[in-house]
Picture (cartoon, rainbow, N blue to C red):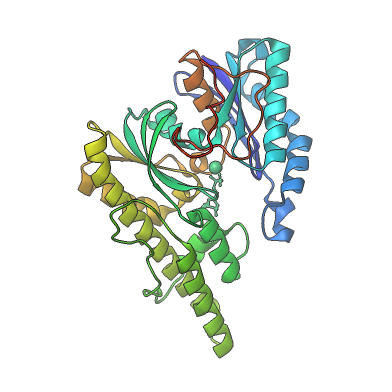
Length: 353
Ligand code: KG4
Ligand code: ZN
């Protein structure tokens, strides 16, 4: 089976082709960073127009790189949500059009399912596994029991951790995008700040909170600016302190989830981390230790498959397709689309059998 994937839910325009042998035949990503940088964050309208300008050519380039014609595809998968709706519409409409013209199945993929199943593309991880999903918009712990079967153990009650990294970078004057900038600055620290708060640490549930950490960081930055001691050294020490506190919180919550998950899902195969923040090397190292203590294998996809890409969308589409599932061409793109079936406000999975 060979599937074309399209991703356009945020600020990456991406097209990729994967097959059922888990080979990535093409994986093209066009970042809009330069277009959004002057605004210090992603501007939805700018993103949607940019996807529209670039997507067709990117798909053609991916097909050419894979050496395939559309008639050789078994399906076309596109992100159907959640995300910035203008961009999602561009990608989903393009996917539907290709599917209609070439009479191929169309699969609307939940972007979060793309992240969640990436470890099966890269490492062939068996169900069930424990997933820490950490991105710019999401921060949750789930047991992945099967394709479409997600049991949520906990989630953030305020900011997503990637959002916290982005805000920390802004506070520290490190620019955009925040996560990689904070990681780079932290590596230069001389005396990392150690007493920033670790919200929710030690609690019996598996939820997260990052707004208190962000506020504490702002107060430290303000104090140093007022004292005239906010220099490159302070910037690095605070970045390292923030990163350490965020990672401590993520690891404490993940260790708690591993304890709970063992009872809920016998035969748990691994701890998997996914989403953009999973590209953070300090986080990966700490999670590896958590997994070892819990007696679980640890799987972290390569960084370029953690941040947004279309290989994960093609793969999730392929997983659905080989279960005999596809979507109707009247699928309506969704700005919000929770992964777990029991989440409030969910109206069907959008994928029909
Ligand atoms: O999954 P993703 O590419 O897009 C969303 O679906 O949100 O995640 C983007 C998020 C951003 O908040 C970015 O700052 C964060 O992932 N991120 C990182 C790193 N690389 C990306 N956070 C911490 N350390 C990194 N190295
Ligand atoms: Zn993402």
